[in-house]
Length: 418
Ligand code: SAJ
Image (tube, rainbow, N blue to C red):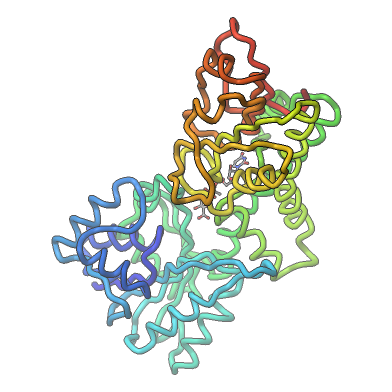
């Protein structure tokens, strides 16, 4: 069997590698000629644990190659991005163009699987009509399904194999055909359902998390007003066997949780006030953090603030859609403040401002604001903080730092109630 994977990003490339390793002949397609050339040389253009070794192996063995246009195959897997327009509606243009690009090589009984995250009904209302317009009868002479990816960056190669997969077909036959494809590589369950159910379940996974985090963030605000420690409240409430409140923080970032809920909202605006409200609450957190920082420094002349962490979450190097970056940039706009940035996971070329080392960032600073729960920030050298900072105040929006040394006088703010 031959598989053609369209889109060689964080999902498409590892997926292509795993099918190739399982013995399939795989061609990976990308519109970017540089990506194609890099892959054909056995190298990769993205960072992911274990991926360089896997790709080198399957390219050297001749089981995976790359091309700029789809080739004849038995299975097509579409894994292209679905960005969001400025009006917060999904941009499915890449899914449309990938589907159109495979039409010239499509043959009877082929299976087409869309893995990209898409708004509900996209398979039925957008993808199937493209096939129908080309003379095919999707579900009868070619098979069409949505199989959303659900992997966590940093664990992609493991999760692609071990996670449960949801396969939503345009009809039962399509679901069955597409599920067979995944059963060859997945050790987790492969569950067959309808396309729209698969679309909605993927979106609801991330929406559930976003709404739950919004509740935690709202609790942080309420606690700040009432003088209660939100983290203690969450820890105690979560002792209940059916309660699992998530953690408050400086906001929700990344390309999934902060985006996917809008894909539901655009299709059902009136019916989704809770989801919209959660987005508003999470989007308001950077401002809440900034107001608290302002309060901490309002009586200091020429305050110096060291921002620790710019990524959208801990222990990754991704700064795109990061609330931490937004907070840094807004604080830096305030001429009364000197704001410094420190992040051991971010490289200089990723941001348009200077990054400082730990000692340099805290030298003469009044407040350290922790915005990402990197392992490096869970323990900080307290003697050096006290020695170098003018006032050793740590405002920890991720509640990740544990003061260890009771001898030194760190003023630790792990929640906004104090
Ligand atoms: N966050 C909080 N409080 C929490 C948990 C997270 O503020 O209690 C914040 C993080 O700091 C971050 C954001 O939420 O800014 C998102 O982080 P995340 O770890 O929840 O998720 P992602 O965006 O890295 O990956 C998610 C995962 N989805 C779920 O866990 C339901 C992943 O499995 C999906 O494959 C991925 O989205 C995707 O591609 O959709």
